[in-house]
Image (tube, rainbow, N blue to C red; front, side, top):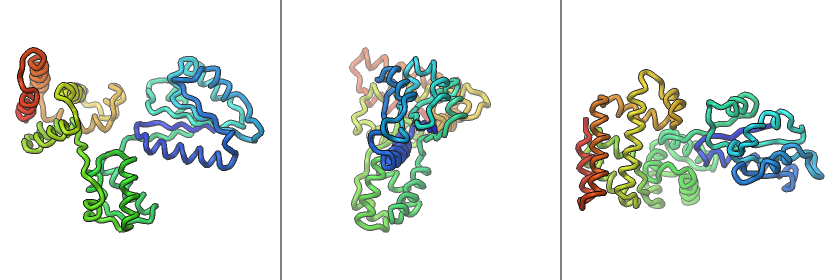
Length: 306
């Protein structure tokens, strides 16, 4: 059997990978598991692992991480995977797959294909509520969203904090969340841009301060703002294409595209060009004149409102 694990949600992908490999090893023994990396391991090793029979066991498992990055494998994947011995189970881990390639289409059609997209805040809150029950705790939907807002979107950290909260008291409340967790600065450049375009001056300045507290330098903020404006420009010029179509063609995260659509709708193309041009002017001035980068960027953000 061949299983494909893909997607940018490394936490969920990793959890399933661990469950699958641990279950296999428990049944067949540690010597029946082979792990290979498409970037580091020679194609000959990959080929040998896939075609050889298990040693002193009825079955073996081969875990291939990013084999698509191995040129020879990418040229011969179909022949190799179609002719696998029945004694070999394969797990292919490809965090990023190009949906335009025949490799993706083959894996989608011919393997047990599992995709793990990044979760937004609402999905993370639902996930927390679900796993709290699995771990004999209780966490309401509102408190779950509060925990995500307080800790951030890192699932590994959220899972750790949830275990700590359940250990203290299985019935998790906002009070125990405040008592046992620390608010993490976890704003994003997109949130900063979104607040600026909405004209929320106070929130904009607070989010800017959070970015600086996270040790994000002004030049990095300029680069990140330029990237976000690039995404908005792609969305703006995409016509009536859906978010998924735009993401597929531009090779972007669909969630990022959907989030950018509201800003794109609020701007004319002329207004968008001016905001890009103004940011470029700031970038040039910072490199040539002794001005305060923080003051220049904050002023720019406060003038973005449409």
